[in-house]
Image (cartoon, helix red, strand yellow):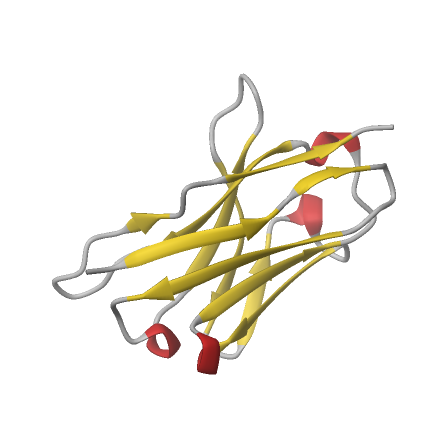
Length: 116
C-alpha cells in the first residue's frame, strides 16, 4: 500500500526559510517522479515543482528560492524554501503521481504561513 507522509511547515517571517519533507512507502521510490503542489485560500491547487530522475523542475514563481531534493535511501523528498514571501502562504502537498497499476496518492498537506 502506497503511503505519503509529510512533515515540516509552520509560521515564518518574510525572508525566512522552511524545509518540508515527504516520506514515501509502498513503491520503488527511486524509480518515480515526485511532485510538490500548493493551494492558497481561494485558489486552485498549483504545481510548484517536480523531482524527475536526477533533476528538478520548478514553476517560475519559486525558481531561485525553492530547492527540491530527494534521498532515495530514505525514500524521502524535500522542499527547501528560502526567501519566503507572504504570497507563498499556502497548504503544501506532496504527490506520488502513480504508475503502472499504482494509483496517485497525495500527502496529507502541511500549512506554511509567511507573515510578520
